[in-house]
Length: 339
Ligand code: NAD
Ligand code: TYD
Image (cartoon, rainbow, N blue to C red):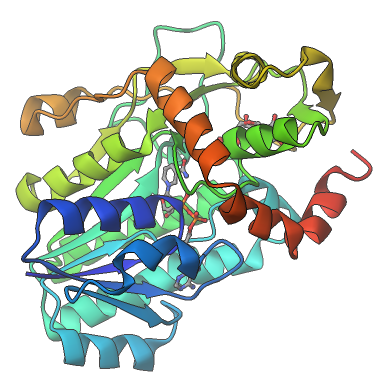
């Protein structure tokens, strides 16, 4: 079994590679990653010497390169994590989001059609459903919830989902889609809420909370997401969408306070800053389908997952300090300097 994992030098893709190489010692995993600002080869160091692992630096939009890789590797399965993934960046500059998230997906699917695969899996997001109101806790996203996007990021991810469904229906591509809620855990790039707050708190820097911090996200430990994708690519029904969520809704401000407490830092570091444009209020996943069909349930409780995550950032300072000392500084100044 050979699996091409795109975007495997990023947060969730790298965790997925570790999960798969650990669980299936006979599988060959080929990571295809462009190494954008979000990709980090040092993350994959623990598996670089594994004879069943290969890293290829490549853009998923590079049709010739992707076709060449398919000719060499004859993959059985493709799992597409590669994407521009940060909502704030999509608000600053949408174009690369359309290119990578939509056109890149198309190139991968064309390669799958040309060379033949048993499964193409698209890693999508709950953000394609838009947001839910805070005063309707009974409402949740199911797979039947209409697509209703807010940001250029979510619009690009939704467009890719529609193309995957079109390729399945029109060309019979054996595809599945998963739509997951917010992940947290090791190797999360420090521009996202949880790692940004941990890094800033450790450096006694202000903790920039957008708006009033009342927005709600449904947080899932990254390993649980990887296990869900593992189940879907092996046992999920072709042509189907599966929602993945932690049943763990939390307000941003509460998460930031938990991080302060765990690190022994004062809440006076919290600074309320200008809200994100078009900021989605609440995400909440109903994961009944994947539970009933594939037996998946989140295993990590938030209280344990956040402690593991904080410990990881404490024990792996070089990983994130190297990131935030580079071009990330310019990004931070641009996004938060005058906010
Ligand atoms: P990330 O930003 O940490 O990693 C993205 C990876 O993709 C990086 O390694 C980057 O180098 C690579 N990449 C970007 N453009 C590429 C291109 N053109 N060609 C090849 N590689 C390219 O993202 P993540 O948080 O790990 O998210 C992975 C996937 O999961 C994305 O598709 C995202 O939409 C989805 N998702 C993320 C979350 C979350 O909470 N992080 C939740 C649901 C879904
Ligand atoms: P983020 O990690 O960017 O994920 P997403 O926007 O995809 O859900 O943000 C999570 C929440 O945290 C979101 O409501 C925006 C908020 N947020 C802040 O309040 N401050 C920050 O500095 C960041 C990065 C996010």
